[in-house]
Image (cartoon, rainbow, N blue to C red; front, side, top):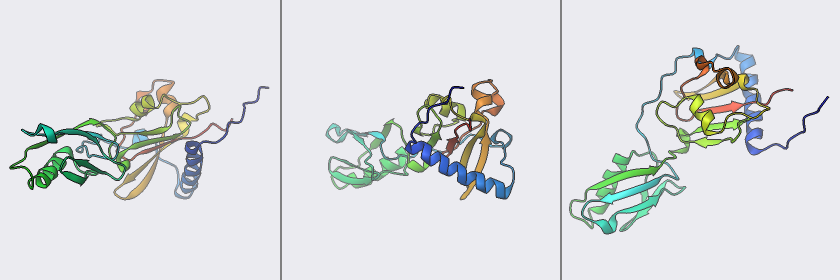
Length: 212
């Protein structure tokens, strides 16, 4: 019999195992975990909010010397000519444009500002995280009407050792954590589109390793 080689744990796999163990324990105490495909979960249609790592293009009408392309720093702020440390995180592009206009009024008469987002990350709390036995576990920016199939495409699918049908979707709903079972094997291997579920900002997808 061919034995599978042991692979050293990664940060993502360690996190996934610890989280999955905690969820399994909680599930035993509260009963059977619901299948995500049977739970109503309409797509999220909120406005996009800016987060660290986003690349912004600031256009100031009639002031090309103030129009710049800048990144949002890890602290959620950015700086432009004449104005430093503008808090961006959690604001929509339109809201940020109005803030910049107020800050520029000291130097420019009636400034008109437009903010364009060129590279999307969003705030950390709104990103979708895929951990465990995904081919490339990482966080991805949530996009409107994103499904778990979209997330799996973004991370390159599952590893050969994944127990796809035991995947857990962890979601915060009105301040309460909810855990749902996802049937990724049925979706990815058998083409069962009924197993595809809508995602929401902040969802965590935990793909466990097969027992054998």
